[in-house]
Image (tube, rainbow, N blue to C red; front, side, top):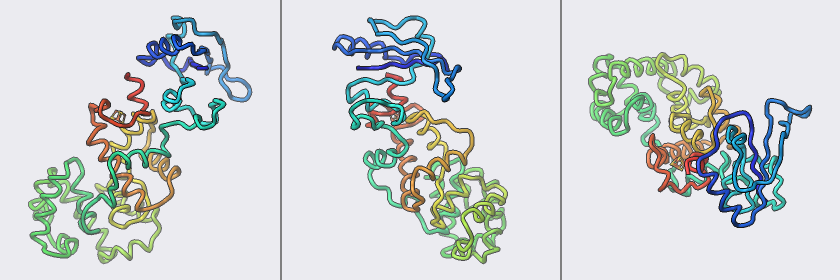
Length: 315
Ligand code: SF4
């Protein structure tokens, strides 16, 4: 038994659906087509069912105007690809009622593909603080070159050393990282904040994560991604780092698009336990996946994630 539910909230049918239907139909699967009026909810807040009919070999032009909300095939492959919430699926076989792709599964899926990443962000806590600023709008190779210059010049204790330098001198050292004047000024601002703690990271950690985050965000040039990277990787406190890769992956894999940075962060922090090692590795896995496979032009044909929403709607 298979059920196709269409809603009047959106506008197009997924590509490839007709083919899948033809196969299921030829195999003798009973297919029900259900049309929902989501703009006319019942008293209980459930969208009203407008029509229900058996599939006879094609989808009427009326339904073509609507979007398929979910596909409930009685085959494991199709159930696996379905991202319907568990509590909405009434498949009698409970083992099939687990959606293949959920945020809860993402860490395990990515870890299986890319292997353990450990802490992922390299360097000492002091180097991480500096590289969190250097990495803004550039690639890691350039960050490494700039960091090498700093380490070669300072030899040790890079935070104290940089704090004693002028913005121009820092600019010169970090030239390979690009936007060096802007980044030098940002580093200076950050170093002023660190100096108020005598560059003692343990002293900073006596404050709550919220306080540290607020203080970091009040430093000119330090945005949420940079602040959270410093908190998670340098101070080793549990806050989830969100970047453009995280947003892209959530959109493609799960169809989740949120407005604010903190909405993404809280979604991860509510779904996964607040664990430093987990968040460090998870963010690394997301970046690795986005760079290796889920690029701007995604390599879906070679990507092992079968339950990806994007992949399945493009088929
Ligand atoms: S299947 Fe394609 S869109 Fe989905 S995660 Fe893999 S590369 Fe990205």
